[in-house]
Image (tube, rainbow, N blue to C red):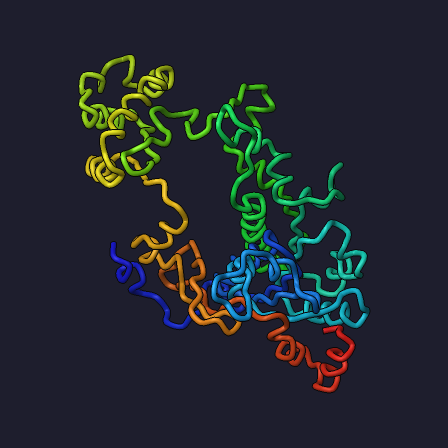
Amino acid sequence: MRRADFYRDAREGHPGPLAGVRVVELTTTWAGPMCGCLLADMGADVIKVEHPDGEIARRSPPMLPGTDPAVSFMHATVNRNKRSVTLDLHDARGRNLFRRLAATADIVVENFRPGALDDWGVGWDALRAMKHDLILVSISGFGQYGPDHDRAGYDPLAQAASGFLSLNGSPEGEPVKSPTFLGDDLGGLHAALAALAALRHRDTTGEGQHVDVALLDAMLFQSTGYLTLGALDVDLPRMGNQFRIAAPATTFSCRDGRVMAGVLTDAHWRRLAHLLGRGELAEDPGYATAPARIARRDAVDGMVAEWMAERTVAEAETAWVAVGLPIAPVRTYAEAARHPHTAERAMLQPTATEGNPALPIVGPAAKFSRTPTRVRTGAPSLGEHTDEILAELGAPEAEREALRRERIV
């Protein structure tokens, strides 16, 4: 299918499938902003509420090269498609404005330490009393309840506490965290999905609810069932780039780089055996099934390694793709950014951000044929929409000026 064929019935100028949904996002750093980012990308009007000094993501290095004013890679990535309002929730007037803003929302998203919103008088009980069908999505390290609920919780702690670190890395090395914000990303994804499920329930029944998403729970849920294996004391060795359920399958060195390649099915093994010049092993009982190959992991990995060592990455990729076998070059992010497939899938979209033209911002992953999603607007400058949003709440200009003078906004 061509891209034009996929989008042939697209509605031009439509913001996305969540058009008409309002989200108030009281978040910081990554997990909460990621939840809001997903909802904003899908067309929701996401209003990001920050302290007048701005949140952490705005100041987190590295700054994008050539930007003036300087723009953090985090802020540019996760806060696009949002509007920005500043409110000081430590002041009663700021809290009152937040309550007025929340009353206009379908969903409120927050990722502060459990109890923080209650301390500010804008927790679940206060918000529910004000708007009975509101959905509050709370994202935290360890959840709203449980023995560890009130501990500080960050992405690498969730990775560590979940068991993920114990398996990540080379067998002979130390446990290694993910190089990306994996716990935050998964927490944000589960929070966005849960928000949509709660929205569906509200639209059906008129009932709002409080949604509790823990980074730890998200990591445990996405553990490929390893939590169940751990509960049953099944041995889980660290395997690096190899796979428990398949062989050969790992990274291999070519003459000019590395590839990730392998076979999962027996049909793929038969094709691979012939490609390797070992057709006699295609139906050999010692190799023809996955359990047999796993038992001979070193032997089958060695066959592939020997074949790969004689070829370039391009030669290996061409040969494997030609016979329908799975393979991918091990690219850097710089190489991935320049690949034609990345461009065709619109995974980098030139976007003006805080006065900086055409920054390459990561595009939405999900594609919608009828209501296409895109990076509509760059991450906003701090408080860029404060006047606009306060005016929407009915605050007159004189009140807005007074709030600015006293740094409530």
